[in-house]
Amino acid sequence: MWHFIFSRTAVSILFCLIIGLAALLAPWLSPKDPLAADLSCRLAAPCAQFPLGADQLGRCVLSRILWGLRLSLGGALAASGLAVGAGTLLGIGAALAKGWVGILLRAVIDMGLSMPGLILAIVFAGLAPGTMQGLILGLAAANWPWWARLIRGLALSAAQKEFVIAARAAGLKPSRIVLAYILPQFKNPLLAGASLKTGRIILAFAGLSYLGLGPPPPAPELGRMLQEAGIYMARAPWLVFAPGISITLVVAALNVAGKIFQGEFYDA
Amino acid sequence: MMPDSDLLSVQDLCIGIPGNDSGTVLVKNVSFCLNKGDILGITGKSGSGKTLTALALAGILPKPLAVRSGIVWFKGCPVLPGKGGENFLVPGRDILMLFQSPSRALDPWVRIGVHLTDSIKAAIGASATPRETPKETAVRALEKTGLDATAYDCYPFELSGGQRQRCLMALALAVKPRILIADEPFTGQDDNNKSLVLKSIRDLTENEGTAVIVISHDLRGLQGLAQNLLVIYNGRQIEAGPARDIIQTPCHAHTRELVRAMMFMEGGGR
Image (cartoon, rainbow over all chains, first blue to last red; front, side):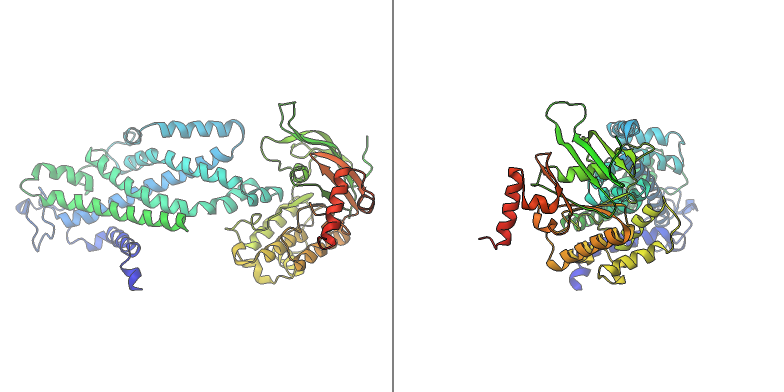
């Protein structure tokens, strides 16, 4: 029992849970309105009124980070979900479709893989610049080829399994075989991959909004907060540390959780 | 030429790799007939082409392999396995193949009941309306093989190897195909399970009129079960006819070897 509580697994899962809850409950947890400016408290150091200090417009940094987590986690999960969905569909199609459809899908995946993710993300984010949707689309566009390749490999090996051949020989419809007999086998690799990839996506999310591709200024986005805080680094270093450390901790927790999932599934 | 059997007639079946004429024919000129309720044994050394013949009939030859030539008649209509035309063997309903290893033939992520009902639905989907629900059929088939209804909700890993073999037999009993192919159904089974396999096969042939093809390298298992025997050696059919005649007076040297090996094992290895 104690052994489990102090294990890496428990700590990282607990930490992920705390972050998730903080993001989910931001409207109730944050002490102040994240957008309410009070110029009299400009660049205030951390104190009882502003636990993590106040920014260049006198807004509460703690509140902004809680709301920012909400934006980043929500956006990253949406982008991850889109990438997993598109990748799974295309990967299964590329592995199992016969004739030119399969060849075409394989070519599309190879093309996706050959392009640098950051460029793809910027191009797609540029379709709806300065919005959350654009950023999510961009990150999904950058990540689906990785999923498609993973799923294609898994589907190819699953299709060779004797029970899949047996199901075909028993006359089951191909759609039924894919949904009920092949897809459940992807659950563990998907979970492990998703937790690792979501961490990276959060990082990319912050990076792209640092470059100005995310939701527009008043929105409390961690990457943009970091960028805006840069010029005040000497006078108010907490403005840089607070979002920077939050991003680092979230990504680290997800990475450790992902590694643990991976170990659980592949060592067993 | 019309076939001289009422169910399945295979003439000069050749299996190989298409687009390459020299030396890639793996099974050559296999011919046999099957009537309703017949049991045909196909025997030969491992690698002789027994399983390939079965896979070709079931329409699931692995990728580069294909039926090169030959005619297959099913109920008086010419059909070629693996070719989607107006005439073909409907997988499941017309022909069902039971694989050698029950652990590999069942999806570890899928419950036994789902395996059974999916196959039942696929088989009856093409024919008349059923008298009972697929679940009832499945549970009845499981009970026939000596398993109880709790196996319906089990995953394959929750059952022993012998119980999984029973599940496969239950699948055959539930689907009631016109033709059943059993690939090495006796390998690695204890006597209890062997007798259950025999009982299930007899049940199908006598009550449902299913024709059964039993593939086995073990002549002892086929003796007394199959009326007719087909001996394949290096992809060639070397002997065919009533099982009793072949075992008593084998013509081909390889068959004599198989029979001698069988006698040797029966004599306790002396």
